[in-house]
Image (cartoon, rainbow, N blue to C red):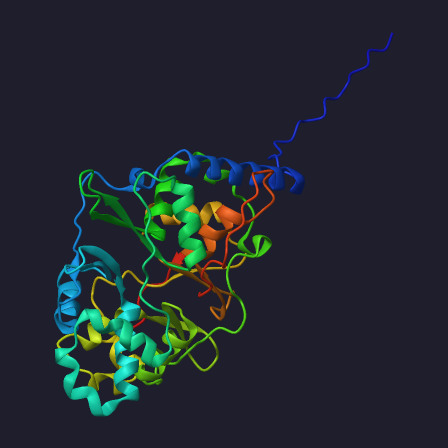
Amino acid sequence: MESSTSSRIPIQDVQFQPTEDIIDMEQREGVKAIRAFLRGKTAYDVLPVSFRLLVLDTSLLVRKSLNILIQNGIVSAPLWNSRSSKFAGLLTSSDYINVIQYYYQNPEKMDKIDQFTLDGLRDVERAIGMQPLETISVHPFKRLYDACLKMVASKGRRIPLIDYEEENKREIVLSVLTQYRILKFVAQNCKETRMLRKSLKDLNIGVYSNLATATMDTPVIDVIHLLASKGVSSIPILDNDGVLQNIYESIDVLTLIKGGIYNDLKLTVGEALMRRSEEFEGVYTCTDQDRLDTVMDTIRRSRLHRLIVVDTDGKLQGIVTLGDILQYLLLGDSAGDESTTISGNGSKESVNNVGDST
């Protein structure tokens, strides 16, 4: 009898690749879990164990307020009206840009700029037709989800936490929440961010058309006009081929005008960026194929405020802001969640660190 031998087919080590349906399902479940996480936390929960808060009185000179922000390394501060003992809004770099716009349009009043106080900012905004000071706020024990919705609806990048004294109900400015601090809190404490495996392109996160840009030779004052008219916090700086070279941020304006030197606004962007603080962390870039879980992990590890979307040649494609990401987590994707509607849309500005090219 002949003996027969059987050959065993070797089993290949094949890595499991999830199907598109599985990725879609996990994406929806991840978003749903993040929303539940936000509903289960209060705005107060996001605050660190210790923090510093500077509150500026509205009677303070604009020039002095600018020096205070720069000396303390901050870009915004709550305002307090000591006459009414009430919160008076949030001072940001946009307010200083409004002041520059005002005096650019009214050069005959430039000699009075050193006497200008913070309580006159509303007059400036009305004069140049810009949005008024950000005055939204939220109680620290409100749901974090509600605070985020309020921030997205107002198109604000930060929201103050206002409490009240028990006896006389007087307002108390507790702290200020930023989009970055909220998203970092989510990335650090909500493991479901690992389920967000769809790309920025698939999720339609970001802005990819009608982008305002400049070059190294563009005068700074022209970039300031773009920041104000577009309502954005940064302008991509490109070369003649459309390749990303750097970005010019609204906070760069603060460094340029410190000490009340407004003639420096005639400098080119390239010259102005040479004066940028050494603490600048560089420009964060990504492609539209990068996944949202990768972006959230970058937010967890790094301090970033936006991602510049480029192609394989480094040419500008779009901008993804933290507001875009927050809006998606709150309102994007059909997650089988309770429906939510708000008035207004999130801000539309605009993961590699290419550094500062200047």
